[in-house]
Image 1 (cartoon, chains in turn purple, brown):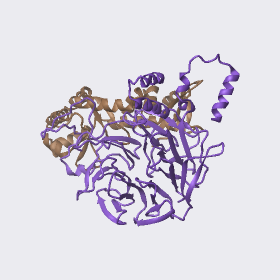
Image 2 (cartoon, each protein chain N blue to C red):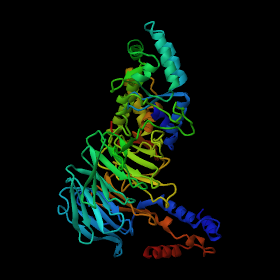
Image 3 (tube, chains in turn red, yellow):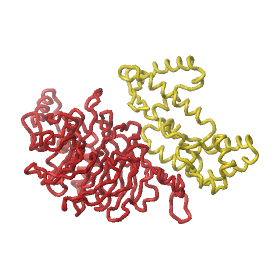
Image 4 (tube, each protein chain N blue to C red):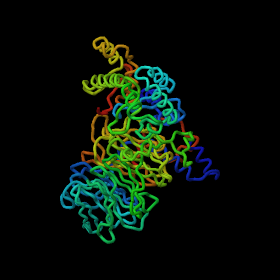
Length: 428
Length: 206
């Protein structure tokens, strides 16, 4: 199959990007535990947060429940066994007092990173000096935070054990806004839109995913309702206002509106698709839902994608949902760290389970931090509850350069030649 | 139960959800969500309305109109699983006459929210209890083993013994009904062994 791609690329019949995405998709479908490269264990608790820098995709920060922060150079290879090296680190208790719930790089360069912690603070750090530049007291345990990568405003949105979302401005180093609408006791996950600099999605313990536009005074745009669905290929009933929608609940009763739910449990994970039109959310009802967000938001938002019965999600901690880089892998994959210790790999838009990544069959180390290295690289890093960081990469056979398969007129196969060739490849 | 449908199409659960929604909107099928922990139930509309018409003539005289109005309301909202008092009032079913009759016969069920009723069917409780008990039996049997797994042949033997022992509860329940419910609901997953198919718990709680 791939040789036909090579032929069409050579003859100019197709876009060379098609070959690239076919090759990368094939590699993504063969992700396995890396046998060559590994991370020495540094964290003594769960590795909660991992983040790869956006500029060079070279540096990864890991933050754990032991409050240690380590920065790794992903291009480093130490010796024959390819051990990753630490570039810098902040020892436990020095940075934050309690565990770290989330880390994000400053989206525009490597100079800064932001950490949120269970010690109720968000700290901004300078990477060169490894010193904290700002500290924001949140007054409640920070569950998750996010900074927009498309916005000119430098607002960090913070989801804490508090009903309102606090926006903190890095330019004025003070609190900017408070978004209240969530009804539960905590907000567990929060993500800025990748295309709209003013739109935010948050999930809370009231089981709702809310969309916000921070420019409006009454900022909450809508609550995603799991009952607003449309079947594939059905027109739906036409209402009096001639809007196409199917109602499974009458919205005229106000008592019922406050019962609108996106998940029948706490919403603890969110991720936007890169085109900003779809949102994936997960909750402690062990369901993953994909929402279609083309406005108007009152109609058919729940796309009814069913991710199957293997999803395990019972803990309240924010789940890092990771998508494969959008142009690399077609169809796009969603990596979900399940409570049983597996990482489940699904096709995002269809819900089909593609792969289950497990360290070993019978150990139950939960994966908490998860990050994809970025475009160009087929590497997935996961941090688990034992303090290990694990690299998942494409299988050796999928990584082999295509040109090798192209050679014709090979000499007749010989056992000794095979062994020699195998040794040759290992040394490479 | 919807878990049986999911067991029939294990590779494509999205297909089930979307098809059910489509078919419900066309009015061929009625979805019922009486207990969120127990899962969704699905019944063919023609069977539902046959039962509704059959139960019409038990109860008070005024209730015959209430049942007709209810049937009309359901047909106008084919994909709905809950009704608020306002919706029922639109169809001229009032608290005193209609709602109370429907509740007592079993076509409406109280939900946790006052003023909101869940669409249901009479004696749904015994059906749900049966499903729950069979599932609980299955999960307990597997939980007692060291690795939470067992060969299907062995489970089948244990099930037959269980049906004989607790025949008042389980008589007539087929083994494949139990297995489909447990597979489709995500409580167990199958795997292959040289000695036949085996089943393993997935860790789903409750």
